[in-house]
Amino acid sequence: MRKIALPRLRFLRTTRSIQTCIYYLGKMIFARTQVVVRGACHLDALHGNAIFAPNHANELDTIVLCLALDAAQTLHERIPIFFMSREKKFYDDMGFFKALVYGGFLFRLLGAYPVTPRDERTEETRKNTLRTHRALLRSGRSIVIFPEGTRTETGELLPAKAGVAILSEQSGIPVIPVAIEGTFGLSFSNFLRGKKRIRVIFGEPIRFHAVGDTPDTSPLGKEAYLRKAAFVLSHVRGLLERRAQEEK
Image (cartoon, rainbow, N blue to C red; front, side):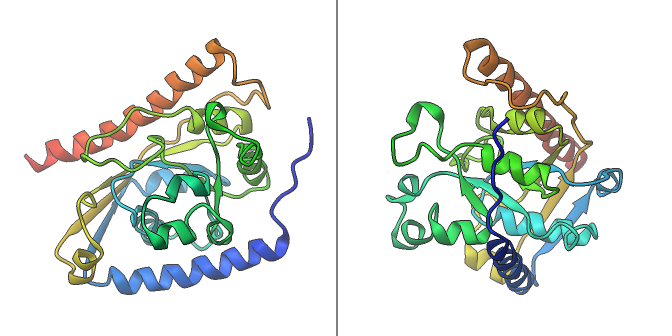
């Protein structure tokens, strides 16, 4: 197996510092918003790092997740946390700020490393694979990956992408399904005004058998990973549905 180098140490330290600053800024932004956390007991059962797999309805979901981890008293031991993003070109049509920050060097400093789907890779993006994320997991870092692969535009869950299952199975690191409820349709000003209650629910760890760097390109391999990713997302859906039932 070819050894994959981790991001250089100074970048890791920079990422830790930046994430710490963003966390405290997030606490100010969400000072008037109630973030209710459930299922923190499932984090207590973890002995090491994890792959956090939340639904994705708002660009601020990552900050919400970090605030929830802090409420569960498990954030600071995990910082820096790393994320999976898309390549820079993916964000070019989303406005000046996103085109400037998302997917590029600044995004890497924030802890977000790009992955380009195999069938969309070009010579420029051929290195955007899961190798960096697998190396980070094996070094004891935690990863956040949205199983849907992108943010929902309707509030409904999107079909699962294979990445979360590939990462977990090839690294042996458990997946924590996470349901974030209450962020869809909220703007930055909504958060500042604090007119919303947001719930974050952590599910039980899901463990896939570690098989190492096995090929994921064959039709059968990809289909199996998609089924396992859908299994993870079904747990997220179950957490959301149970919350809805409790509200009735």
